Image (cartoon, rainbow, N blue to C red; front, side, top):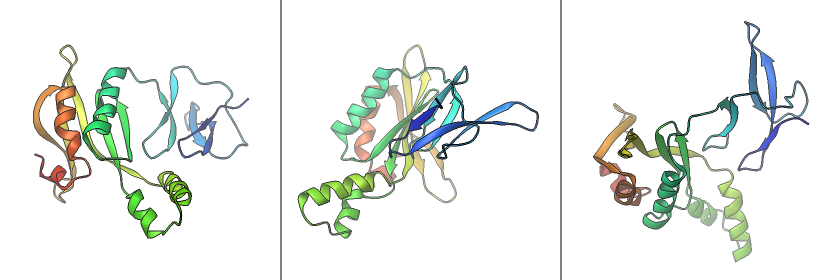
Length: 191
């Protein structure tokens, strides 16, 4: 049975194997269900879905960020921010918070859904089609002490990169101080 994966948008992807110019195997996902499909997961690889629901096969990543630290960010966003649509991505020692590029509530108002059920169903469908951009990240800088620094994405034309904000510290305090600015004008004043 071929390896398949359903992303958060409900799209099914199948794992394919190809050959590089040097004769080595290469792997990729496609929504087509016929061809040179892979039936067993290659050793040392894992399926990765990025915040915009694209699916990839990548080498197994070392687990540097703990489940508790990820949960800390997730709970902090729910408790301290007004965000409804966001994604959290972890790569190596970085926890990145992605926010929606579109406002689901505004879009649903513009589409003028009638009735509560139609509005709820419309918002659910809209959430499946929105895209996300990285806005805030917490970078682990001391593995022994579990100390992080916080960065936000800067959108000034001459910068367009991550900039450090605030002081280094424990993740809990940084989450409380900074996630409340996500989706707010005050976010762009952080430096």
